[in-house]
Length: 307
Length: 180
Image (cartoon, rainbow over all chains, first blue to last red; front, side, top):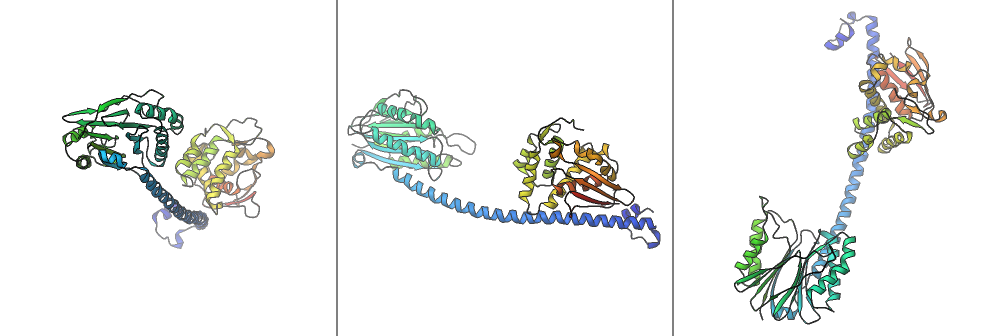
């Protein structure tokens, strides 16, 4: 039996079975294995040491990440409080003439939906609802930028068309630079009527047995330098005005079906005789029962003319 | 074998560079996107600045506090690839053939080119098959731990040798080889 066969069989041979040459080869093989073992040991030792260092670094990086995450969370909490503080309450004059119910929920700490109440230079009041592209801090910063612009132009003008066009022309370059745009629904309310401009926003006026869906032929803010259209609708005592962003109508259920504008508008019309808070609650109840998860900011404003 | 062309700077043959990178990947020294980047644009028949090989070498040396046994293993793994998937089987039949192949630096000369003073040599200076001893002198720009692995890997690839030991402790450029 050769040395290879003996080694293959695993049997321990009696000394007498091995030739001197076999013994010599056995020694060489043993020394070869010893060398291989030394090399393997050196390799695995270096590898293990590397693993230990890698774990230590990972641990340190995790701690650093946690520290950084904590700082970002604190900043976001502050940003969220600032953004909430910037969202308005109706003025006393406005509250005397309108019942107002608002639902505003952001997907993240700070969001892209924005609504505002303004007083115009002609003594009317205005309501704006906007959806800034994207979410988060960048959208919130654009919101503060737009708010400042509105405050400036409202001191000089009362026409929604003039106001929105001025905002668009002034903000166009900035929005293009920061790669943002915003839907706009801007409504000026006077004693007899509402005048509105709608670029991508959603609006519904329920008046008695009739209802009017907002025309929305115009472009978003920041997309094009174009003229906007202004529309006027009578606004009488008891009429209900609903303004909202795409958060509710584009929400999807488990089957991937959209909630739709139609469903929301029908619900508002159906409940239009109820107090504004109730209309809002019914809409939210229906929406939350339908949608599988929150996937966008949601803003819904219900206003009723009471005087 | 690679065609040689005159180069003004030090260049390494694509197959060698790829073999080095592939060995690092096989041994999980680099992984993921870093591994893809290593192999990404290497043509095996092309010639590349030697610095590219140095870059990979640096990746290993930065990753390991004790990189010597790792580079040695990379050298062995490279030669395993050269033997099993490259031209190795055609060139050597026995472990000792790998030593013969280094006579006059012919093996090394096929994978590195450039100015002579930068290329250096990897030359078999002494070989006694009877006693199982040999000596290679290396003045190449390659890492010497890697070269030690190349010798061990090259000699052990055919599988006929029972024992191989390569030492360059006293002088990193001189490899004292024992085999049986």
